Amino acid sequence: MEDFRFEKLEIWKDAIEISDPLFDIADKADEKRYYKFAEQLRSATMSISNI
Image 1 (cartoon, rainbow, N blue to C red):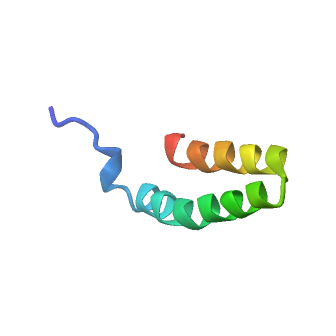
Image 2 (cartoon, helix red, strand yellow; image 1 turned 90 degrees about the vertical axis):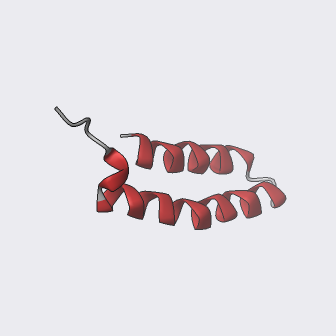
């Protein structure tokens, strides 16, 4: 039986693709001292591809 490879799913590839711009936004939020927002955005971005 072949193992399931989530990396082949288009939705997973899309999630990885949108994570870079979201991390950039979080970095900009840190610069403006929106620390809690930046932390929440990073957490949400990581969970997109981990679900």
